[in-house]
Image (cartoon, rainbow, N blue to C red; front, top):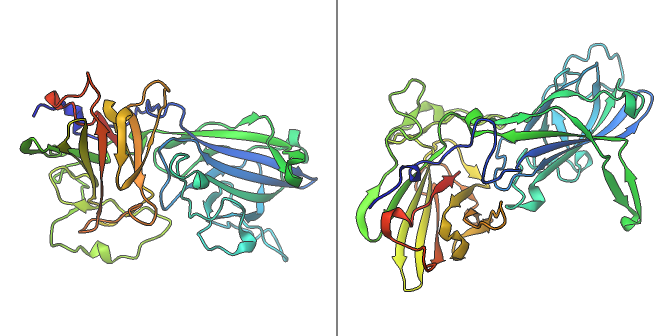
Amino acid sequence: MVLILNFFFCPVSPSYGYDPLDPKGNITIKWDLLQSNSDTNDVKVSLLNFQLYRHIEQPGWKLGWEWLGKDVIWSIQGAEATEQGNCSRFKGGQLPHCFENKPLIVDLLPGAPYNIQTSNCCKGGVLSSMIQDPAKYAAVFQMNIRAGGAADSDFDMPQNFSLGVPGYTCAKPVQVASSKYSSDGGRRWTQALGTWNVTCIYSQYQASTSPKCCVSLSAFYNDSIVHCPKCSCSCQELPGSKCVKFGETPSLLQQVKDPNQEPPSIVRCTQHMCPIRVHWHVKQSYKEYWRVKITVNNLNILKNYSGWNLVALHPNLKSLTQVFSFNYHPLNQYGHINDSGMFWGVEYYNDMLLQEGEVGNVQSEMLLHKDEGIFSFREGWVFPRRILW
């Protein structure tokens, strides 16, 4: 079995954030100034995930910025600040929601009281990609801000935005055309006093210098299995590398998990030390079709993957006939090229990849047509060119 080396790894995107499989992907923070009075401003903030396949899992986004003045978040709906700050200067009456110069805002959890909700809130900070779940690719909250400008021209837009998710870097706010809102069944339109966009892009190298997964390969016509190479993601001997041997139950598993923090990366001890292993097995060959089985194993001891997805690059995906246990959508990022696509779980069936163990895997088979002139069992052609997790 002849294979190309880059089959083995889940490659990472360049450090500057450009992703050839999603060249226009970004998360946009839209800041709408809805009303401005002498001492107060009403603001609507939207987080919009314009990425084809990348999504934000639990514990979710944590939106941060820096006020240029001494602005105060007096009230908020659809989200909450993690810290109220020192409000000792406010004597008597209602205290502000947040008096921090650098507030950190998190989404409300599902089931939050109705009177503090807004539309598209309360998902615990989870943002789906547009393809995977268009109903969950956005998050919205509203704020009443005091000590801001008296009018649009005087409004001081905050700076230094961050998403609080590893790998994302946010640009400076840019004022754009004001957002418009429909009412009365679309017969009337109102618009914001001012709208600013903040664009955030992702870089895998900034998120982690090592891959998140590795790929193993096998085929019905060969008895051997190409395992993940040693130290694909880390090495057991490296300082700071944490793994659990089979049969061990470390005391760390007894600790109470903080829902606002990502669980520490502790994996099952393997030669590759990857939290995710993807196995691509060429299962059968028919006269006009061939069948592949994909298995994803979670080797992370503490972490489940909710709303997971997997991207594969293979020239025969343009002739994909059927996927049996996963959802599938071609990426078509360049229009005339259809060699990459996204797989994700079926809701309430396998959309949750559980932590390491007997049930810590998801799998599906797919049927592809043998394209005349390009299909071949030679030189590893039937194996994927890239796998992204």
